[in-house]
Length: 229
Image 1 (cartoon, rainbow, N blue to C red):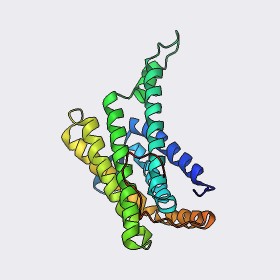
Image 2: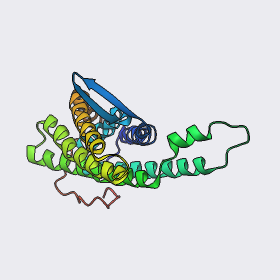
Image 3: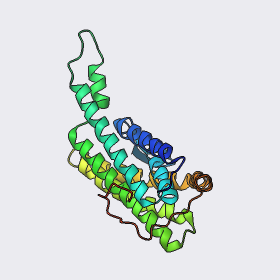
Image 4: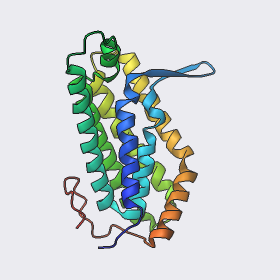
């Protein structure tokens, strides 16, 4: 099995972005005003697409199996961070400490939102990696931009379609739910497209340094197989 110089670093970057986006981002709704259009979106959407960039790079450079392993590591990281948040919020505050209400507001994630986030992340990222790997075979390694954007449209589409209804249906008004779901999906895809030059650069540098070109011709694409072999 080949030993790669930067695979672990890419895994760490992916997990850091993922955990920060899931813990810090969802607590705030923001608006984007473009002329007469007013988009409402979760603030984390500005950074969460970076996880898809890293996911695309991992799949393109290191193959689906190694990308799948990273997704499982990210899943475990988000799950632990969610449990940690729940426990710390639930601990009785010290006498005189005035921050409990604000702390609970920001980090007191309800189980429904945590569940929605975990399900949407796992399915969205796995589909993104799968589409990326399959399209690489179909395009014979050409037209990287079509694979990164195409896989993001499908992966982010499933992510948004799962997360917002599971997390907020019956809590938000349906109009707000649909607006936020569509706005976040659109922003994620456009953001991913805008980052395409960076994706190209990362892929080019890593392939040259790692001296590798992987095609998933005989790969087991089951999302529940964690080992690389």
